[in-house]
Each structure stands twice: as structure tokens, then as C-alpha cells.
Image (cartoon, rainbow, N blue to C red; front, side):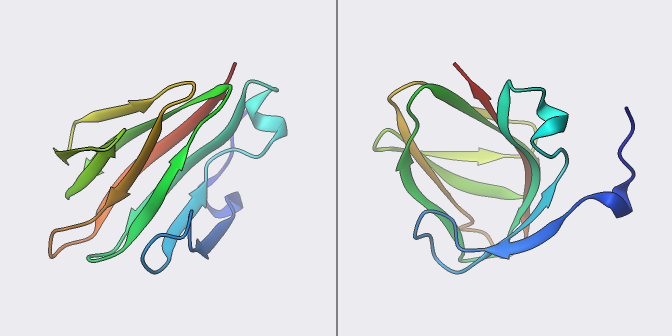
Length: 114
């Protein structure tokens, strides 16, 4: 299966009561994840914006930082991340991500189900 870039859905959304909105490009829809995932997306977080702190139950979320840098809250522990870093939040853990730089931060987000 091939999904062309122009076939991907785009949306701006405030995620988990974060600061402002983030741009989400869905790289696969529910059918394209074959029942094993909930999200596969390219997310752009503008400076000063964030994905709010939230927990994951019965799933794991990965962030792969493509561009820029941010502040990843890993279960209450702040960690600076940059392009090339991978963040993982597993079952029962919590996280958030904030762009604390002056340039857009881009990442791939993947949520896989238990």
C-alpha cells in the first residue's frame, strides 16, 4: 500500500490541553495501522507551543525528533531532546512535549497498541 502525501489528512489541534495548537499530518488512517496502532503522524510544534502532559494506558507512544529541539517531560522529569532523538512512553507512563526553541520542531509520532 502506498499513501501519497497529498492524500494525508492535515489538522491543527490543541493536544491534551497543551499550549496552543500543533499541526498534525496523519501518515496512516485507522485501516492503514492494521489494528496495531492508534496514531502515525508527522507533527509540527511551533515555538512556545506544546502537547500537554498525559498518560498512556495499554499503549506506547514514540516520538522521533526530525528537526529542532524541545523539552520532553518523561514522567515528571524534564529532558531536552533534539533532532535524531527518540522518546518512548510506555504503559502507565506519562509525558508531554514543548517547543522551547525559536524554530519549529518536527517529529514523527507513533502510538502502538498493547
